[in-house]
Length: 89
Image (cartoon, rainbow, N blue to C red; front, side, top):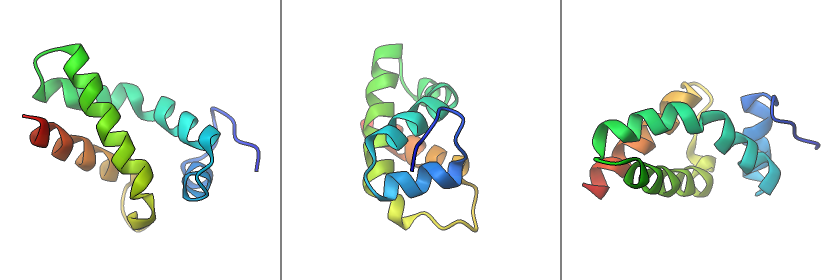
């Protein structure tokens, strides 16, 4: 499958399940800004927030098989970001 920056969440999730690097890149880019805002609320600096966010996305990519489509995908990611920020603190 060919992925694009405007691919749907469902397509990107399928790509991430197949460990496709391009799908991971576009998913990261799609949610980076919103999730950075969440991690900034928990940390003292932008550098720290980016570190937390990168750790959170590592968890997203390694545990994406546990996501259930019945829930909100951005909500699932934000929960991982919040928990990663709390773990960091």
